[in-house]
Amino acid sequence: MVVEKIGELAEKRGIEIEEIREFDPRVLDIDVRTRWKCKFGCNYYGKRYSCPPNVPENYEEFIKSYSKAVAIIYRYEDFTKSKIDMQKTLVEIENAIAFEYPFAFALFPGGCDLCEECEFEKNGRCVSPEKVRPSIAAMGIDVGDLGIELGVGKAVAVILIH
Image (cartoon, rainbow, N blue to C red; front, side, top):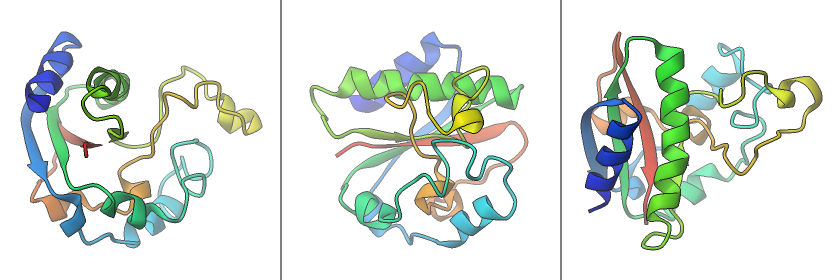
């Protein structure tokens, strides 16, 4: 049921889903290197509420507290536009499944781009913290560990379900 709901909401937003894959997050090998890549290689580091060092350090414990998650593999033509659409959709999906899965928690594909101009970057205060979720990399997840090969025109988002 949750997979169908995700597909429906994504389709409404015009997101081209390639696959929705269920997995057990407890078996993930959380990789600290993803956060190092954030710090040394991403211009969002420290500038977005969704990115390190603003994401708590106990992310592994948090992820391992879930027993079910989904990876949403989607196609895009314009990465930034699709990323923003997916970030908005992920929050909608959380809200749509909240009754059945009250602890559902999305992980953004990349740093937050919900606002046209980021107030957090300017003054350290996010104007919509209730909508922002950590990036996948900020949580120590290497999507390659899920058997997902990304390339040009393909991205992934994650929702921790239960």
